[in-house]
Image 1 (tube, rainbow, N blue to C red):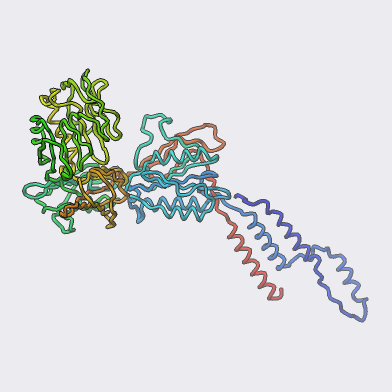
Image 2: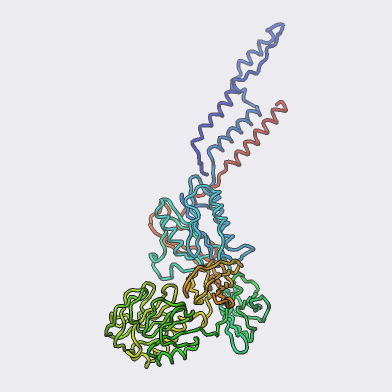
Length: 638
């Protein structure tokens, strides 16, 4: 039992005050009698009676004293300890990732987590404060060090689960930073532990995220059973569209179910079945689907914990070709032949720089010439020879040393071996913001790529005739990579993407109006220029549509891309959440490795629950009842 307002004990003086009033109360009446002789014995008996005997067998007095004692008891605010907040300042962290949408027992894990957090708030003791953090793709502080339960609960009810991932390390680091600046702080995490494993087996405690003060993990789930669409890809063929659907079983039991394939108009195109073993995957093929801009695959299985990952959209890989313009005053047979074999562009050749409005192209290749202004479209520049506003050309230098790939994992460098390539001389340019170096030889930067004024740009500093690159296997491979990267509008669809991530969207050159339509039907105009747009994907899965219109009066171009839930969120098996946590006050050790298990238990690193439930209102209600009884007794004339 805790007493939250012992200073009010002084009100107990009302108890002896009530008794004194009863002692002073006069109970005799003046009566005229013919003689006092007969009353002498009675007077002697009254004189022998002690004053406090007036208080015996008085029901009204007992009821009034009981009511007074209960009122004083309510004023000192008695409370019983409850499993609530763990510190004077408790930081509540609630996981809102996609796996928290899994349903167990008629409730989602998120609903369970909110209910547990609500209990902790309801049981706050006097002077305890709460900070509320949402653990999403980026952690968000909803409320900071509030002692008002209603405000904390209102903020808690404002949270909503999202299909994206949770950055657990960022959320715990934020909570730890807040706890380190506020003395007497502790952290409570409500979630299923899904996401990044912060502390791999065999690692030292120091490798985990550090939380100063006590830490408690409330695991919000037990089930592991879930079947999900792992991947859905389609490819346009000569006899229709072919599709491959991968179904993943993340549970511990074999699963069977049905498959439905829908078109963009929601018409049913094909059906199938699947049977996948526990912890395995199955691939199902669909052939000769009617031509559609996009397809939706939906699966249905029994005992499926998460419904949000049971469907996926697929945009077929396009077979169209983009427009490429080669500007080469002296002609370049090696380059012309390499571009013709790429197969993703229709090549046009020019011997001079275009003047005025030459229209837009998906790809411009400038060989030995440099345009004063970047045209509409992506740029492949070879052997620049002059300085412009966008190119800080500095001259030509001899190349010494072997060529080396600076970023071997770059898409442009895939399968390209530069070790046998030799270059005699190359152009030199200054720093260009937005471009990254791909190939260098000693101090010389030979090839760079990146985004400039919203357009994709690749610069090859040397003339192909001043090297043996056209004679090496690296040449056709690099040209294929470069043209594919520069003309991705026609070669591959946009995306797919994950909720909350940044997606590079290729734009149609020369488009005057662009509108993006989200899966929920809302549309937003885009004020973007260039051929590439970095889009911050919202926390919304489904099919997105990008509509682009040109000034030429041609029909609008509609392109689609899909946003799916992460495969990591489909694995709904609860996981341990480990941190390096400080002990509660009074312990000897400074740190302890704390973890919550996957069965829903909570481990708190020796932290004692300091929450309390007040009994004030219950006691006050009981005192009011006693006063009512006392009034009824008085009315009956006791």
